[in-house]
Every structure is written in structure tokens, then in C-alpha cells.
Image (tube, rainbow, N blue to C red):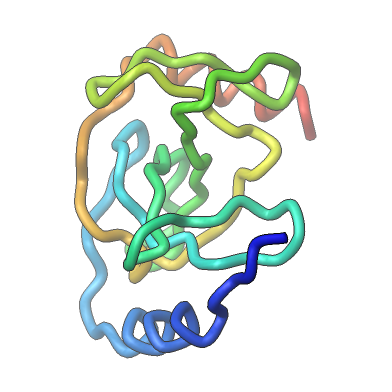
Length: 128
């Protein structure tokens, strides 16, 4: 059993929440994002920033985004979509799509091809 350090994540979450500026992000961009330390099967971030790469699916405003997390563990099935990003070969974890605050974004690391982006949007619609 892995012991999760929720206290450490809570400290970082307070810092993120106090940010006064929002990074500008657009659909198709890939960002490192402080996803946090989550409960049960919810996808976690890693390292000291509890981060993982995400693809921006939709910007509802400068503050609110819909994202899909990425993993380098290549998986198959209807909840995963293999991608060839500018960063590495990875998989979009479609079942973990979520709304986030742009305050969670750390740094932009790339941009998804139009083809892969359209495939993600199509697959998300099929899951709804």
C-alpha cells in the first residue's frame, strides 16, 4: 500500500489557489499541470509539483479549462488513445478528462497535432 502525503499536496494547493495571474492556454496545447494527489482511481500528479502533462481540450474562459491527462504508459481500450506528441509517445486518458483552474498550469511543453486533437474530441463525444 502506498502512503499518500496529502498534507504536502495541501500546502501546494494553497499556493496555487493564491496565484493572482492565470497562464494563457489554448486548445491543443500540452502543459505540465499540478493535478494533485487524488483519491482512489483518480489520476495523480508526480514529483514535488504533483504534476503531469495534460492536453487542453477547451478554454471556457481564461480561468477555466477542460483537459485530458496524458501518460507514457501505453494502454489500450476505449478509455485510452495513443498519441505521438512532440514530447514523447503517450496515451490520452480519456476517462480522466476534467475541468481545472488555469492556476494549476505550470509550463507549456508542446502542441498536439490537429489529427490527434480531433481524434481526442471525437472519442470524448463517444464516451459521453
